Each structure stands twice: as C-alpha cells, then as structure tokens.
Amino acid sequence: MAKVRLILDTRKSAKSAANGLYPVALRLFHRKTRIIRLPYFSSPAGWDDKYMRMKKSAFKNNHIDCDRANEKIYDKLHMAHKLITELGDSINSVDADTLVGYIRKAWDKKVDTKIRDEVDNGLTLSQWGKVIIDRKLKSNKPGTASWYAGAIRSITKLNGGRDLRLNEITVTLLTNFQIEHKAKSSSKNGISSYLRAVRALYYSAIKEDQFYPKKNPFQHFKIPTSRRTKKKRPYQKWTL
Image (cartoon, rainbow, N blue to C red; front, side, top):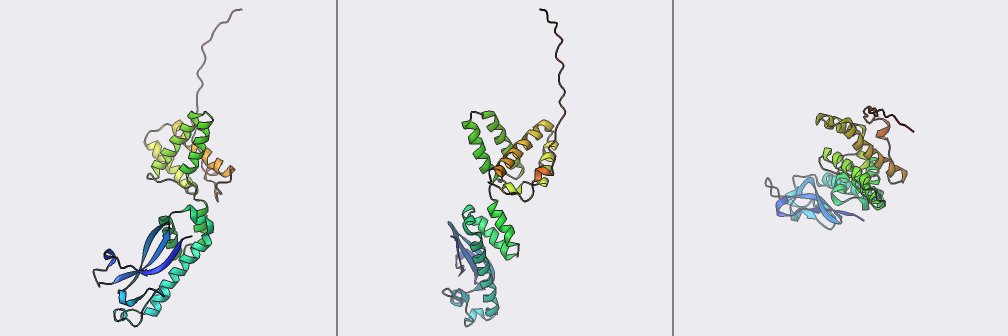
C-alpha cells in the first residue's frame, strides 16, 4: 500500500533562492519515492516533523498564518490518503508517477470516480496486444500476429510513442489516425487494415472481461473501406 506524509523538503536543490526557506511537501512512497512540493515555505526550525505542521512560535514563520497554512496542507494530506484508500487493490496497477498525477487531479477537485475508472481501465493496447500476439504465434498464425503488431506500432506512433490505454481510444483519436495516414498518402486498404486490427484487439479485451468501456468508439466511427474490382478471368474453352 502506498504511504504519504508531510515533510519539509530540505534538499539543497529545493531551497528557495528568494528567501532561503524550504518548501513544505507531500512525500509519497509507492515502490519509489516521489516529492510533491506545496506552496508553503519554512525553515527547519519552523517545521514540526513529528506532527507534520508549521510552528506558530518560529520567528521565520511570522509572515505566515500558520493555522490557515496547516489547515491547507492537512487537507491535501487527507485527500491523498482518501484517494489511496478508495483505489484499494487497483493501486497495484499504477506506478508512482501515475499516482502522483491522480493525487494532483484530486487536489484540483476532479471527480474521484473518474480517477478510479482510469485506474481500473488501465490496461494498455500494447499489454493486451502482447497477449493476443503470443496466442497467435503459438497457434502458428504469424501473419495475424504481425498484423496486430503493425497496427499497435502505427497507432502508438501517432500518440507520440506513448502506449495507449484502451479507454483512451476515442472517436477523435481514430479520426486523427485516419487523417494523419491520408496525409501521408496511405491507401484506404492500409488504413482500414490497421484500424480493423485495433478494433479486433479492443473487442477481444471486452469479450474476455479485461476492459469495461463506458463508450465504444467503434460504434460511432466508420472504418474506411475501398471498393475492390474483381478482375475478369480470361475465357477458356474447355473440351471434353
């Protein structure tokens, strides 16, 4: 389980050049340690580490309403604790940096259920794609495996090289993918092939209860198709 506490960040790099004081911060430990600085500063003598609060009696804190400041920083600590508790076992699926992002969102008064949904739907396209690709390779279907792998590489490239969570696949993303490849003069068949592979992976994750979409983008996005003209077979005269 992740742990959080309030500290005074006394690292040399944290010291304010303007006033020589150090920032109050939230220290998060979730496999790795992360420091989230808060907009309050004090000296080591003005910080009560045991009770995690600013001392009203400290000379360096004369310019601060310590009661108000302590109320604010306790509120942030409480919100971080609450978020971690509500995430429960889901927290094991995220790393420290991602958790820092969720804590910041909670501080910005984002809806807690939305954060929970992001964690619970944290399965990425590459993660699930690897499962399906491994199955195809074991089933002696290297062509299908290569098809999936190519589609994953292509759509991940559009996303700046960052792996996509399945809940990040939206109509907007699919539209941008189509436009991007049209601009590169990609054929309709090529674009369609990539998008059909992504759709197949998306639906397989739903079918196997690995992902629970709130809105299915493929129900609102039409994958481009091109008309194929059948070549006429040359007439052959058969004789018995």
